[in-house]
Length: 192
Image 1 (spheres, rainbow, N blue to C red):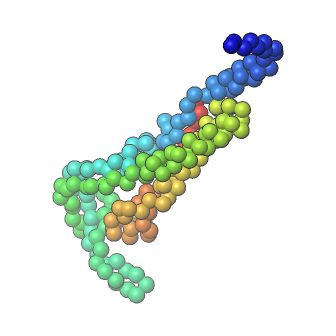
Image 2 (cartoon, rainbow, N blue to C red):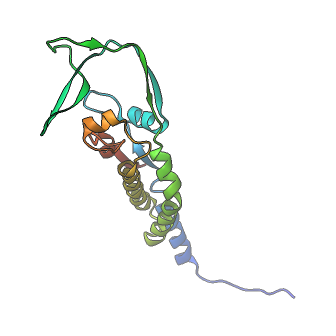
């Protein structure tokens, strides 16, 4: 038996669905990370240094760096004999380093942030899309800022592998991904 039905109206539903469609097309992508134009004071792109930290690197250093070995004096007098690098203008007897390899271990802070937070980011996007009437620009913007915060937290919390003892002495603390905080501040997001 066939049932016949006649539906009236629907214009408001059609208009609402069309508005949701337009809202969902206000933006298509959120980019989060170390965006173009972000550099260290010497002009080095932050993305380059972040990539080296993320994946590690091996540098064949040609040697020739000047250094001295002297007593490091503390509150109680000479506490140890230390080696420190000196600039070209240093006056006095120096030694120079031989050719050597510098190994920077990988510290995958970015991949770790993604693995740890990707479901929360997806959930936040779904909630925001629902709350904003499918406004993708607003929703992607909100999630991009959440992503920025989570990546920055990963940079701050990263501790393994630790810095070399000489680096810890120089910095005064052991946070492998923080020194000038340039990389931390450079994490950014944009919506297009």
